[in-house]
Length: 98
Image (cartoon, rainbow, N blue to C red; front, side):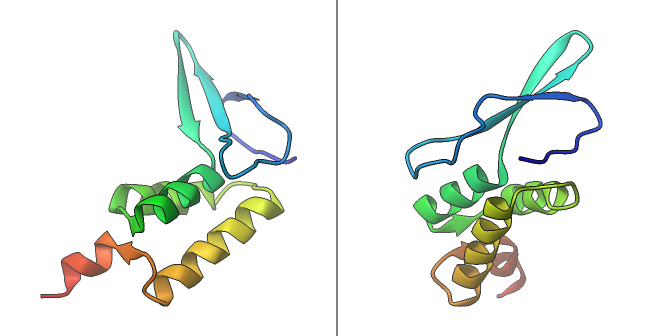
């Protein structure tokens, strides 16, 4: 498992994820701990909702700039394919079209 973060990070799960499981990454900052979803969590949510929000898209864009696992990349590619085929609506595209 590889992960690169500018803050100290702890992973709550180091095992492969089943569709019903989720992985949360806790990022520690002085005085508080933030919890952010993994790439697979965001992709899973988009498939469940059949919708990719602008916020989720931005999160993915940011997360893909750091190190990530092969499973995250595969999930991202499946999402990209589903969006291109029209199986998942993309908020950013809907805002552009009249």
